[in-house]
Image (cartoon, rainbow over all chains, first blue to last red; front, side, top):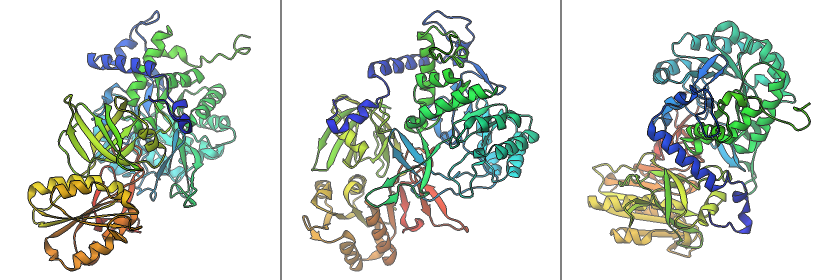
Length: 360
Length: 264
């Protein structure tokens, strides 16, 4: 890349990694893709010296996956939008866009705006509604091999109960993620800023299904551990962390907010340190497995979440930037493990070492 | 898709002409379609930028060259402006729908300004092969915004130009000229195709509707992905139900029948 002029040092400083390293990653991915080898085959190998095969399969919330890389709800549509760009069957699991009881038109435009190393969105849960989802989207998703996790949002505890029941009655659903934390809908669907409401919603969903349920929690709270414990007590099987951070941006020329909803959810690499911190805190507070997300772009970003205590990770905003990004994370994670002599990705779990603490 | 900058040169003080050598890219150009372009390895600016395709030419080394014209405005285009031939870029496309010219149209009325001109120039170059009359209206704040005039002249179009500061053509806004042109025309065989800043599109749409002339308009929106996943590029369309209705600029557009959109 050309040397940036002084007023534009910022993009260079925020470069993901040196282009040399990145290029190696891409070439390696190309080879793997060419061979057509399913990523689970490597997972069957037992041990590895540096550079050897790496086991990538994990079990999250009772759901077995060929690798720990999922798609974050709201960033991957209903998967079909991506079929021309990547082999969906190589993903760890699919988490699809939030479904509500009735169709929703979504929020007025503009709905998104770029911010430093991130973006704000206020889509407003635009979706076709649960019945159209079952009719029009589910048959396609069912034909894919990775486990399907359906994300649902309700306006009331009762909504969550009914949606959970309706979805779990369908064939081909491996788990249900509860969107208890959408910051962008009028009336406040953000149940997960209150431990009592979180408990009630998770409990209602628990009573409605035998499938794994995974509440996706809001980071917009004082102490995320309190909410996570409420979810655990109510019978959740896993926890997704984190949803977007509420943010705002103003156009200083027009003096108007940059998105019509005024505030929106911040996502992208800008929020990764916050997500890492919350995963780390929650991993110590509950026994539930964690699906970590927030600004993951590379395999090393994913490794960071696993070290903090996540069992699996989800790729969100990066799907927009590069529709093949999720599979690049799978390959990047494999390379990271191979290069560091890690035979099985599960050994990364909670492997954070804090000098002066772990070694006591 | 991995691609490489073939050229990236200024065409005026604020506009630049970018050519991206993209092996495997479609060689057929559908006027109105767009691409998402980003420099690789960069997280700030984070999102790819949407650009209408101006032309697809044949590169010396065989790969199609996707050509766009862009205005250096914000962080993304500033970054792009300082990239050099040979550097890698990621390009996704062609995306979206296209302008369609009904068989019955005798005179195509093209109205554009600023970065809205390139897809309209692409349309003009396609239309001329069909031997229709071309009336082209270009408007802008200054002479800088009047792009591709030589392309339109090259295909025998009649050009009407306005600038708000009078630095080129007639001083004023383009809808003034458009409206008086429509007044003196046999309206049944006309069809308007337009792309430009939101204010221009709204004004052209009003004039078209007022004169009963069909109008296809290519619109812009903030966009994260370009292929229907983010749902960020919603545009309000006329609703048959009680609440508002939206379509996605990237998938349902960027070209819409102007009567389907809600203009504010």
